Image 1 (spheres, rainbow, N blue to C red):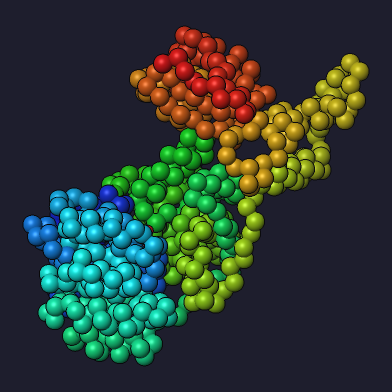
Image 2: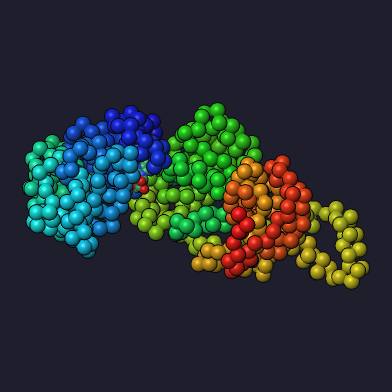
Length: 538
Ligand code: AMP
């Protein structure tokens, strides 16, 4: 899997390189490494690759390079089995062509008003991504011409055949210029695909990414299904629930690493990011901190994680399903070293399930599905740990001094149960289930049981989320984990805190400093659960 090849080594334009950079891709995936150079050379290629491997960019990058923006003719034709894939592919092409001027990309598929497609085709689309039926329809009507087509892609060819498009595909290919380049991608290569390849490709190069036999160590492998917008919330619940000492979180892109690190820091976690764009010295510093236990979690891309060797990682989170099976194996292998117990949890988006299935099929490992943790689960886990700790402290003895204190409180007419309950409430940050509401996974959305506070310091004062977390936790004692979403605006910031901690924060912060800037005006409550008060006052 370690190919050590960068996109820069391909013979592609700066414009495309910049687009790839913007997309946050750190290095080409294995299928890209093996197909892009051959396609760029002009060879016909048959690539065996599933969705999720980066196959779209594998043909998208060379396709964009082939387009002459000065001509309005259709030059690239991509055939896709479904409307969804056609749209997705067109979007990926658009991202890749972002810095090229004058390249128009048009998805055409059944179900969309045909006259709208006429107009778009009339304007000229150098790249057409379409389903075979609709492409043929336009060809028959004379609204699409293949005269200038030089590059044809059959994407998910096995799917297209399964859907009965074989005849349409053959007709389309017969109509395209003979000197075209023909690229075919398919998850499987059954006989009919090979027949199409034989008939329509010239001396094709067959490429599939070879795999070694794998042995996966004893790691508890789990997955959960989570919508994109709920991922952060679910991640923090998992972290709170498992309470790991060292966590490694993987994201597929550099941008993903940066975003997630910022969000985690804003929520008060000691997290740092690691990716290939960072200077070696900085990477070393982050790693040293991680090893020394000064940070609890490392958010990394696959490339950046390769160079690191840390023992004792007790939780690996795949915030995205990895691009490649080998990445998966490499990632989860970071935990359960030296016979220790380890756990790996993969976040699976609604459209990613099949990627996970491929991983399971290949590794022949059952990855168990777990339900989304609720706020109640987090509390339950925290309570269980607290009870354990309390028992341990009792067993260790030496409690006379504290017992005397309790006796003093009891003499003021409280029961020992009340005293213990009050101490527990303090320990738990004053936010028990009754205070917070029992968040069910479906409830993720507007924060419940929280107050929105307005802090009269903002970007102008160079305030960062972690300064707010640090000041609030340090000055008022509310635990960092109880501090919710933070937004920094130009002149002020907002922060969610548990409703019953709001007064403590307002009082406790009076006249205090945040990032060495003194608060000359008090913090105010501007919203409550369900309320829609806005921070206002700008
Ligand atoms: P595909 O297999 O084409 O469906 O791609 C799956 C996802 O991987 C898409 O969201 C792509 O944008 C993304 N992707 C493609 N190439 C890379 C890469 N080299 N690094 C990271 N992500 C990639």
